[in-house]
Image (cartoon, rainbow, N blue to C red):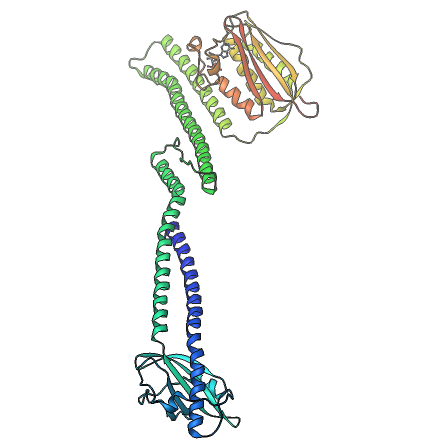
Length: 481
Ligand code: ADP
């Protein structure tokens, strides 16, 4: 069952219940009021009947209330007939046998209910509305007391058709009013509940449409007040905004991932194709000459090494991407820098590679990671600096970080290429012919960021580049090597 129907039914039922209780109370009070007048007349009639009987019996004054005897209408005139709008009278013994009945009763006996008997036997008067031979009657019964004992019961009755008719109309009106009011309340409640719940319906439709179309640009339109539903719509829209951002990011990273896989496959295929071609040459019959064989073998070894380097780079990147928990240690900057500078000097004797005076700095990182990062930067510096060019490594403390800079005097990087050099497999046009796969800087960046550091670059075409690694300084200056 829908909330709309439940709400409407709840409101209508509460209203119907209230109306029923109100109608019942009103009907009971009015019935009381209507019969009270008749009851007063009947009390008078009963007194008159008792007086008349007493006079006829010649027993002297004796009635329920001890009033003096008066002249009886029935003592002198013939009693009116049953069925006319007059009073009927009857006196019965305590065993129910009739002692006296007005002639207009024509043999019909006035009834007395069990409750009525109980009341009169305990000395109280009793009144009740009954139907005798399809005629509504209001009967007043009162005990007749003689010498302090209840001897018989006096009953007087009058037709109650008028009162019952009026009460019947009232009953009809109240029932009709209750039904109409309940139906109207149901109709109005249904419309109002529908209007109040409309934003929720829109919310449902929007959610359904988003699910079907995967379109997170959609928003719920709500122009109403900022009530509970207004706030729900706002919250829903905010959630959609966040979902949209998350969806966009996931989509972007999925695209990047696809690009990466495509680029990696391409890079791996190139050396493999070369090796495959070389193996084909070695298989030839008749065999190729010894010089060619030597050249093919050395070419294959070179390509295999390139392949291994590439696979190693991809592994390093994959590990960094997996966000594995990193192990940190205290790393003294100066000996590490001097180590890699020495290593580069050996590998590139034609360049002037040197370390500036390095202050005594200790960073929170990992020695191998720092060495690998610096080697990537120095390798690039050597690659893109002409023979004889100067390459220097320096380090300074910068706030809570140590900033280590590798500066070269090489070809520099064009401003339009600068934003892309940390992208995986990116190489500038000038570097495309080299043996790099465009992974060095992205590996350096991933490594440094894993240790809560950052890597930045500044460069001028024709003048050289400077790459700076910032790594957090150890909180307490400690000695490490
Ligand atoms: P690779 O491993 O191919 O060198 P990198 O990710 O290390 O790839 O570098 C990406 C690109 O950035 C290089 O292809 C090159 O064009 C440019 N680059 C990197 N370092 C330097 C530098 N010191 N001087 C000039 N260009 C550089």
